[in-house]
Amino acid sequence: MKRFLSIVTFIFLCLSVSAQDSDKATGSLAGVIIDAKTGETLIGVTVLIDGTQIGSVTDLNGNYLINDIVPNSYTVTASYIGYESITRYNIVIRSGGNPDLNFELAESTTELEGVVVTANPFEKLEETPLSIQKLSAEEVAT
Image 1 (cartoon, rainbow, N blue to C red):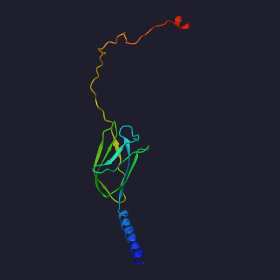
Image 2: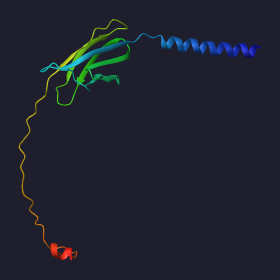
Image 3: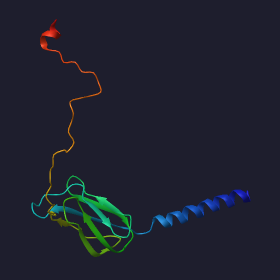
């Protein structure tokens, strides 16, 4: 009986410790990302909290949501192919009541150097090591 009580007590202590760990307050970060020129929402923009492996990608409406962030001050970066990345510093995350963090991304323009097209210097010879026989339409018909 003593052994049974000690096992039950041990299980109860383990469950109470794990419950305390899950009660830690975490915050969230949400917002919308739009094109600075057109005002349209951008789909698939990556939003990362620098120095962590926490991040999100915008949905079809340009919205993102990052959950389970430990309250602290962070640097947040939004990046998208063909657009200039934007970094916001000292974003304070609290366990509740965080305002939306919205981004307006501007298109990035990169001027490329000219492309030069040259003909192939190697000639294709009509000779081939394979046997070729040309037939006219009349020869094929008969």
